[in-house]
Length: 308
Image (cartoon, rainbow, N blue to C red; front, top):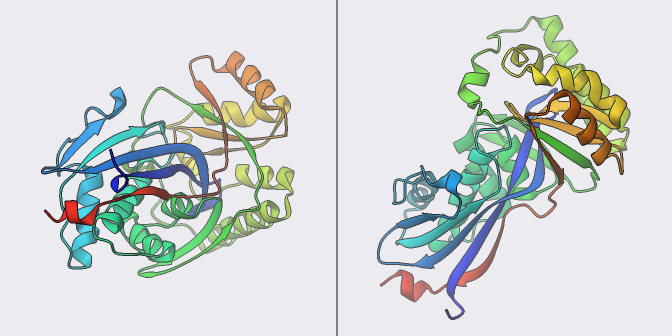
């Protein structure tokens, strides 16, 4: 295969909220959705993992549909490609698998239609499609993102100086975001909102100053979602009760769950994993790190081939 015949799109996973940063804070993780794209005379999506085999294999695939929606926005039309899809992001586990697919679709449209979108433009499109900026922002920019979305007015700050060691505790059961949002209250009182905002503000300050003990404390003080979601993820309380004694700074539900993310003191990952395994033996334990690159594209497609 010659140069210009293939491109690769790689999009990192993400964890949202980090406790009280509900729908506004995201962290990119070094798990990846990868697309190998080549020109073709028809749409063909080829899953490279068993977990992906249930998704559509033609232009009704979510990634391709997202790309088509973006192309239409710019009055462009996608030409068919073959896409080999691989991923080590667990599906429906609160690690941003759907957000990574949205970002992959945007990157696909950008490449096929030669849109030359900036990361900021991709972020705006992705946030509107996803409904909030945390997961998609982390997947696009890498690092830690703090975002605010008010209708179509979307702003964010991206921090790449965060140095974290993490362990993801992943149950075998899926938990759809829709189900997890269903247990949240429709309203909060003014005083509750003020208190929740204060906790979130201090979490951000602690993360930026590197005070991980304080950040971990604020994660457990969340008033927006974790107290309500514990009925769906009872292992969160167990991990909160014991992870610190094994060497964690803090514990948070990853996105809508059911994955729980432990923020680990340097060199203590094995101790935390071994300790928690004694209490929760039926979970998967995955040491992970922050991704600082965000979504990236390598290689290129021959546009003459695409237009045939």
